[in-house]
Image (cartoon, rainbow, N blue to C red; front, side):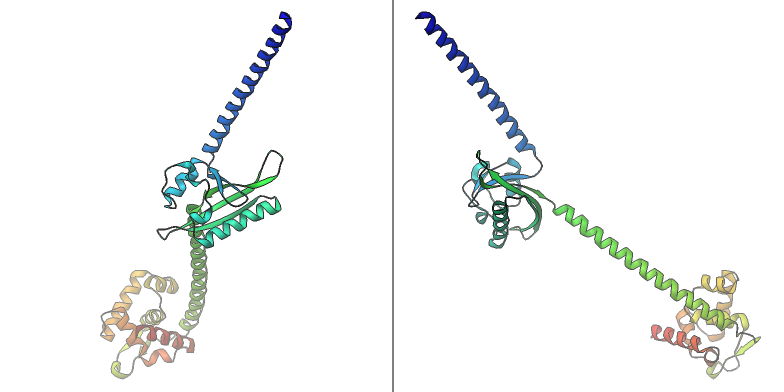
Length: 289
């Protein structure tokens, strides 16, 4: 009888030890799960079928507080509440729609969710939601992980804007280069007609004449070329062009570049050179008025 009791006691002791080991193991697993939950990047939360919060991690609480969506400093303060207690109705409706789709279809959904904060700013989040199951694998709610991507979206928008600006600049450059090429060809055709040694002016400049080189420089100037561009086209030095244009200014009685161009456009000698030159100088005249 005594041995039987002792045997039963030993069996009970072994069972107790087994249970204690199981409890210790479960405590360790629970601690590890909680540690994982608290250290995952993003707001972790879970809700029941009615959208009522069952829990969340500390990061989720801190994010809600920093966004002024709640002011309770306790992590469990969200339990028993729904999105309608924190967000505008249209935002909460969108969240609820996603939750229902996850539960009804039993699938994971990842989507961008925008939130208008109390201070007027906008928060953009990337949310991943999956069905929450019980021990019998029945769907009893949703579990989600939401990450703030507002800064990333801002960078994305800035990069897109920079790309568009660069593309526009490239198109403008190509157009400018094409126009410059066309202008250069026009000028080359015009300059071929400069065969006289002197070009006499009319009107109030009657009796004044320009040399062939002076006429060439002035014509290029009215076409919008810079001194360097004129020098390159005429295959001469920049200093020579400056010297020639200075002489022309003195002959016209002009002090500045704009005044000289306007005076040159009014001279009849330009009209007789080339039709395309006349059109270009007209455009220059309009830009000066």
